Structure formats: structure tokens, C-alpha cells
Image 1 (cartoon, each protein chain N blue to C red):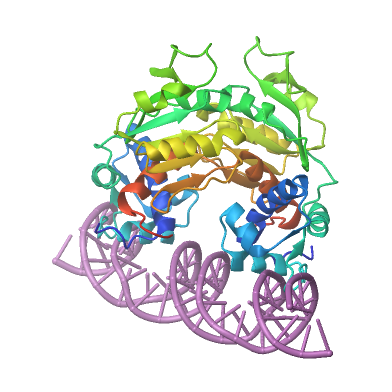
Image 2 (image 1 turned 180 degrees about the vertical axis):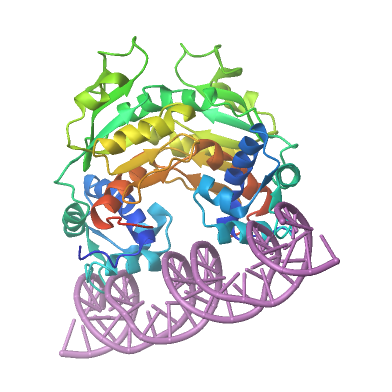
Amino acid sequence: MDQNKIPQATAKRLPLYYRFLNNLQHQGKTRVSSKELSEAVKVDSATIRRDFSYFGALGKKGYGYNVEYLLGFFRKTLDQDETTEVALIGVGNLGTAFLHYNFTKNNNTKIVMAFDANPQRIGDEIGGVPIYHIDELEEKMNGNVRVGILTVPSKEAQGITTRLVEHGVEGILNFTPARITVPSHIRVHHIDLAVELQALVYFLKHYPLSKSE
Amino acid sequence: MDQNKIPQATAKRLPLYYRFLNNLQHQGKTRVSSKELSEAVKVDSATIRRDFSYFGALGKKGYGYNVEYLLGFFRKTLDQDETTEVALIGVGNLGTAFLHYNFTKNNNTKIVMAFDANPQRIGDEIGGVPIYHIDELEEKMNGNVRVGILTVPSKEAQGITTRLVEHGVEGILNFTPARITVPSHIRVHHIDLAVELQALVYFLKHYPLSKSE
DNA sequence: ATACAATTGTGAAATTAATCACGACGTTTA
DNA sequence: TAAACGTCGTGATTAATTTCACAATTGTAT
């Protein structure tokens, strides 16, 4: 993997850049400077230039970046052509929000199936995604699903995780407050809504902002 | 503010620690070591000890930490007694998920009102939170609401943000893909579900995990 | 009482990330 | 054509965060 030298902090910003470049293109803009982009995505312009530079010289001095060229480049880099299949477990409100999200547009990921324990939801489709019973997990998941989105109640998290991992899932986006245990080759990203809110409040109280930052 | 020296990275982990300590207490445990805690929250034990050390010597060598003492300490530090009032804008699936979330238990935040543009939802209550029409934002929000959760469609984000800021909100948890512009004294935390998913996929492809990490 | 085991707190080192600042070079203007 | 300008790419610096590794201290067992 030749891109192993890209800092993780940079990698996390790539999808963000990608989306904004897309917006710019839709607005008909053909060129953009790191300064403009900086204002749009709220990332320091030097950081943006540095991020881009890991991929080579993508811009032109005195001109900026060509939107279309940059987009084409990112599309390849983010593997926008090769789609990763995703399964979503837990069709509650949060899960439903995900299913409605327009992931198909300009994206390298596709939720191809969803599972829930509630029989009322089984058989439905949301956003074009079929919903199966959780007992059918093993049966429906062929080996193609590489990522699982976990939007189940906390106490189910570990059990489902284990089943997902046994059926070939390599990455898990965990929205439950539970911290799950996985084999070392499985990647877990954890998003905890309550923690995000608490952290924001903590920052408000203890790190008051003034003119900058 | 005497806690200004606490690194932001540490501050972000505090709510997480707090929750797990709570769990431990409910399980009847009276002591815990940084090693145990490390396995539970998946944070290196040295990092945990370092984090705690910013608040002084909370543990005992050869023993670990007293759960109750630590909890009491965190309660104060995270201002668990002083509740911060929060308003939620946009009662779609994501917003509803938030309203159902059990924030009242052991928490320093409370969603006190929600707003939506859809007349069908107005007047309802979800999770004990009243839902008003978005036009009533100014009227219903007294000066006590300090945080806004933004779960509206992207294109509404900036407009609502401006209104929130004008009515005294100091922090915004932005779940829309839009990057919003605010005065410099307003704190914005941004959580972008699509970006999270894309980033995970990127990491899967470019940073394969092996035995550790 | 003594030795042993466990675990903290932290100085120092290592790693990772962000920012500054400027030379080089392409673009635009007249 | 030439001068003025804008913007990149990046070396160097600074800042932030994590990790190592161990002396000091406490609990526990005999």
C-alpha cells in the first residue's frame, strides 16, 4: 500500500475535501485556492496544502487547484469507483436516519442490507435497502459486506459484533455507547452521541473562546 | 478557569471515563486499576494515568483508583450537578434518536425543547421534550439554552445557526454536512455521518491492521 | 515483620500534527 | 514584454499527544 505514509489526520479530512470540491463543481467553479477551500471547510490553508502535497504536486503556483482535476484525483484516491458494501444493524431512529442518508451520490459506500429484531420492520425497504430479521444475518450476508454499522441497543453490541466479524466484516462503525472487543485485524470507529454532547458542554465551560481559535 | 491546562485530547475522553466508572459502580466494584479501565474503554493505560494526573493524585500506588472517589471527583469536574440546557432543531429520524437517548441519567445536559418545520410533529412530545414550530424559536428560547443540536437538512443549517447564535446559544453540535460560519466566540463541534463512514472505509483499504494497533 | 506483587505518577523520549514563512513559479495586466 | 501579483510546495519550527519505563509506594501474603 503506497499510501501508508499519509498521516491519519490527513486521511480523515479527505472525504471532507472531496465533498466540498464536488459542491464547487456543481456551482460551476473551475479553480479554487487553498485559501478559499480553507474558508469553506474551516481548516487552515497551510494544512490543506500540506494534505494535498502528500499526493504530489496537484496545484499550480499563482493559480490554485483545478477543481475537476483535483476531483478526478480524489475519486481515484478515495476509491470512488470501487464500492464498498455495508450492512446496517438496528433499524431504530438512528439506523433509519442512516438509511435515508443519500449515500449513493458520489460515494464509495453503499448500504446493501439492514437487519432488525422487530418483526414489524422486516420485509420493508427504506431508501431502497431491504430489511431482514436479525436471525438471518448469517444467511443473507454473503462475503461481500466489509463494513457494519452498529445502531443497536448497547447490550446487543458485543454479540452482534462477534457475529459480524465471524462473517467477514472488517470494519465497524459503532454508534452504541458500548466499547466492543474485536480481533486485532478489525478496525472499529466509535461515535458516541452522548459523549459528543458532553464534550461540547465541557469545552464551553472550561475553554471559553474569544476572538479566534 | 483553573482547568485551562488540561489538554483537549484529555477533555474529550473525560465523559467516556465517567460513563465507565458509573458502570463499574453499578456492578458493585469499589476499585479499579488503569489497566482494567484501559481494557474497558480501549485507551492505553499510560494515557489514562496521565489524563487523571492532570487533576492531581487521584489514585494510590499498588492499589489503583477508588471508584466512588473518582466518580465523585468527575461529577464535580464535569459539572454533573449544574445542568446545561439544550435545544434540538430538526425532529427527523436523527433528531428523534437524540430525543429518545437517555440523557437524563447521570448527565449534565438536558434537551429542554425541540423545533421542527413539519406541522404534524408540532405539539407532540418525544422523550418528554416538547416540540414547537421552528417559527417559534425566538419566542420559546429563553436565554437559558446554551447549546443547539442541529439535525436539520443541510441547506437550513446556516440560517438556523444564525438565529440560534442571535438568541444566546454558545455551542452547536452540527450533524449536517454543511460547515457553518459563526462568530469567533461560538464553539461548533461537527459530526458528519457520511464522512465517518467514508473515513472508515479509507482506513480499511489503506491502513490494513495486523496483529496490533 | 518481611518480602513480594501490584500499580501509580511522571520525567523523558518518541510520535504525530499544525503552523510559519518564504522561494519559486505561473498568471494576469498593461 | 515586463512588472506585479497570487499561490503553491515545503523546510523548519512549534505544538500537542502518546508512549516508555521506572522509582516510589501501597497492599497482601506468609
